[in-house]
Length: 579
Image (cartoon, rainbow, N blue to C red; front, side, top):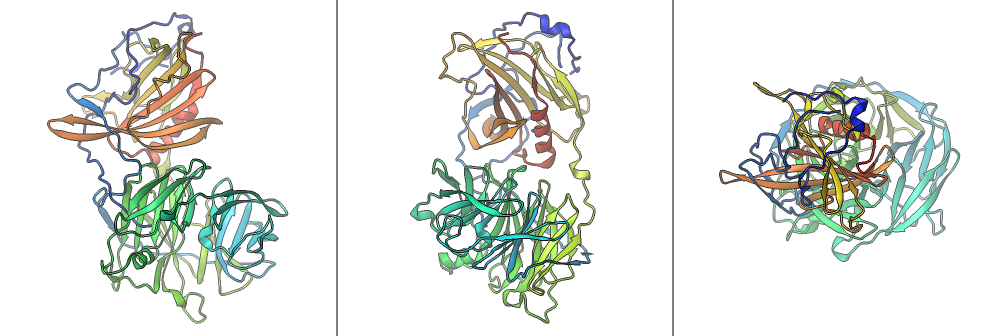
């Protein structure tokens, strides 16, 4: 497939071609495949615990790529649970430790129970489970104590009951605290903090209590569900604006079945963190040496990692007095978690030789580093920007331990090379191996009162097969504008059939909606799943729809997600279709 040459300015002066192509309202991007159909299993429902091309070619009908395959739209249950067999269990040994030496930083206030530490904007904040001044705020470089905040009480700027670590919800944009059925947003200023917003959290009897509430976006949260043998759903995804909720994930069946539901819930306690860039959840079980990585949009478990090397550990009879993992910390590309492996009542005791490690995983579940600390720390946070690990301990009452973060290997996260692509209506950057499959990329169709321009881009083929490249999948870009006959209430290009995940975010300050959709194809009696990541946004009266189609639901892997983000950010509208 030859690449097409960039357009010249004269392309903009050409009259658009009105081709007799039908823009399929139920699946413009979804009904086209350019990759070879590979075998792909669909995930059954189960459960788990815890971003110019101008060619002299003729218009091609839009139904070109299914060939002998018949495509059927399949509506998949939203947030179907993690399948027992969706991903094979992977075992990993503990890597050789990298020994880290601390620096003691004295702070100008006493730390009594410093059980959580985090960075928020330009502040280092320590949370303590105390009645008064539960948040201590510091400068992360000078360690100056700036102020304290947070008292128990009934006033507007107070917190009703003493919260635990799980009640403090930290995201990139804000800090919230779950307080007796209400979510309170805390604004940490330069010299003081205040509660700036309080909203009720809707719940129903079957989901009570709400434990370990975590944030996905401004309206979507998730939390642990109590163990119920009848369905074993592990998480509840809650829209606090609409009150809609969905169950996802399956509790594991590691322990003996003779235990009660309450006992199983306690055994399967875990700590999770959400990664907005990856749209994934990392779940670590306190009593089990297991990490699960769960796709937040679909509820599918993409990796289950078992840590090897515990000679005295039994899945059937886990030691309820021993804690293995604590609360993780995540970045766009990495997962950090403290490996404690200690009996609970030994934590903080003088005379013990407890010095935990910090394990580092990537978002595929690979254990890439083991940082051995030299102090009995109980909480930590990481600044990759500053190259630091900050820790607290019960050993000394006014000390923050600071460690230098070893150099990070970013080789796996280098962006793939892209090149400029241009049509008469827009410019965009796509992977360098990609070329158009459309014979008239500037053709305009009219369907149900809407003008449309749709182009497909795919990796080039050679005699040896597809051109090498980390990013994969067919890219479809569609522009749609209403004509004077358009029904303002009809949006034939905005179908949501087969949607298994939906979220919104901002690209270049434009609100963008993302849908993960699935269809199935049948060939030789085999039913195979095909996945589509669709991104929808508007610029004035032009509706833009960009869809990536792939045989695997791997849109959250770093190579895929970084490239999609780059493609979205590079889009520029040159002119409207009806100009």
